[in-house]
Image 1 (tube, rainbow, N blue to C red):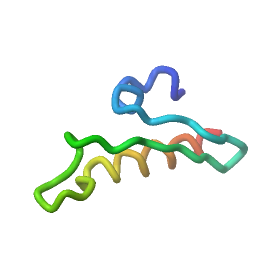
Image 2 (image 1 turned 90 degrees about the vertical axis):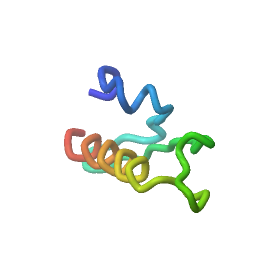
Image 3 (image 1 turned 90 degrees about the horizontal axis):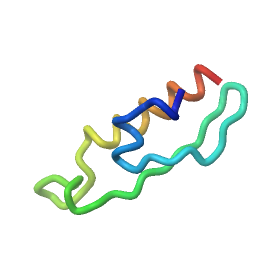
Image 4 (image 1 turned 45 degrees about the vertical axis):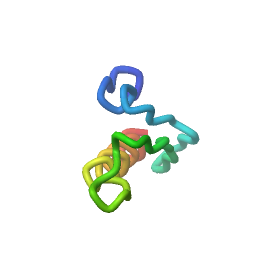
Amino acid sequence: MFEVDAASRKLGIELIELSPGHARMSMVVTEDMVNGYAITHGGYVFLLADTTFAMACNS
């Protein structure tokens, strides 16, 4: 599933651990991903959470 998720892979999300009902992923935040307060934009945080949730649910 993750191999064909172009959006997540393009943003550098990496699969760290996968087992039945469990997933752990990571993403390096770049300057292009921060908001006006210099913190990670919520859309990127949600994308990482959504991708990780999908991996866990489909494992």
